[in-house]
Length: 391
Image (cartoon, rainbow, N blue to C red; front, side):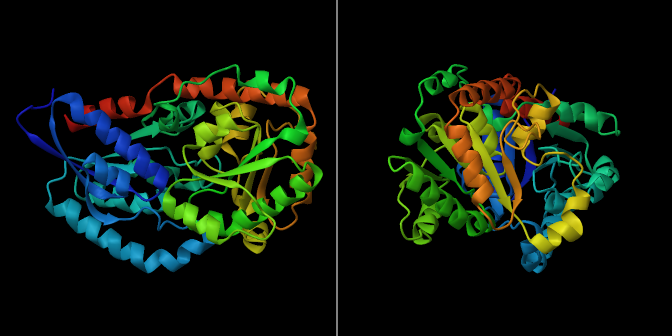
């Protein structure tokens, strides 16, 4: 049992907007437990608002894949600061959330200082980068998995792992009757959401082609309307500034889940947002763009899964029934990586919009897919684990 008279110090490391939100929820879940816990670390505005003293604001600066090289010097300087901070501030527990390439360094600093480390969000080593499992075993005292199959995968490889649910779904009430609206659906009246992601690299690579797709769809279905959801007002400004001629939409700063529940179809950047869209029972296509050269030289040899999107990975492991246009067995069409031509994406969207039976089926499967993820409340589960590790 923890000493109610002692003040515990927890260092938290988050670099992405989603990790910032997850960790803010974790802090909120730990507050009412009756112990004096001081939170400090690196993260974003949500963590700061929850009461975490930030050594540096990192959220919004994270880069993906080849674009990360421009950030190397800055991040290594930050890692040196974190090393010194953990060493000298009597930290009782380090919690690292997502961004494994960076957070492995934070965990290594904790290990050198003799501080236990909790990994919140398991790195997707089952998809690619499996050679890092030894590093994870050395640096991780407890691993919190957001996907059900991950617990067994990591345990078999010697990592103390536990499935905790998914924090994105903690506050959602998943309604399994979303599919009913597609029974009499007409493609010409479709309302479509555009979700280009929150990272600058995602917006830069996906926002223009998403708009071009919307313009093509509107040519065929003139009454179609579009809504674009942004994670915050700053992202909305960026999206508005990059709007191309002939594209018209309503902009919204709102939750992905609420937006997906209010539309008929979504065009989504690959990532955790796809799970919120799935929870809303909203059929979708998923996009992600990468360097064609790097993908063919390196990427396609590193990836070990048939699918790259979370929705299709989960579906293929659980109960796939939908067969996509090309017959590959995916629940929703994914274009990962997407390089240049939008023709196949438009073709898949039009095919789905014109097939009510398929829309009903996909909507049912998407909600059923997310129900197991929502049964546990991730923030509460991780809070319990963190308290046990502070003993």
